[in-house]
Length: 322
Image (cartoon, rainbow, N blue to C red):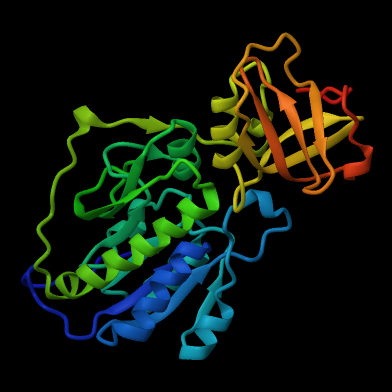
């Protein structure tokens, strides 16, 4: 793959040929902003993946076909960007710039070197904090009161490229992952509105990341959602809300059934409990139930995997299927 060369790196492109890479809802909204309100960007192709058989494998997956059909943009479904056919396709599209939003895989040097205006991504943390995977769940699990989105140029590292712009948003105590995900999308669109003109004019003030302040957050797998009832009600409340939709969910086991828990609240009682995981009460009106944690208890308000009538006071939610 040969990188296109310009005589001047500060050349302005009036209608940059644009490729957009994404398979998630956050990318869908950024692309929508470009197609609706940024006509100078000539989108020559959108690269995405087929709908996953297991939705837990791609949190926040979004079908782009309706959007691309509406604007007459070619949509390509790929299983990988690393195979020769994908690289050949990108080379044939000859992009001046590539946007890669909500794509959880590393972009190879062959692609990074292709567009003269670079490959631009967005990451829902204030880089260099929170490099890596599952940034929204980790922000909630860590009890952060604020986070944000970073718009940056991709390089060969993991979220290490030069920063274009950043914008903060709050994380309120009642916010679950869906709410924070929505805030991150709104912030991504806001950053696009603010910076797309500067990017096309090549007048962005690139800022190097301070690697000495970098933190890295590990990948989370669906099986990491098992609830440890020996932790406090505060910790388990953050755990449940941090793994709620569009993520795979926190869970426990009851009567050999896997119970996914989507919403909970901390009960006022903050006493120490000897029987962590014990179900101590049911609310038939709300169809909710209360579970002891090691310190305090939580009320489970939204769950799936078992009928409410099958839950009995005195049962135990466990970490293992028995």
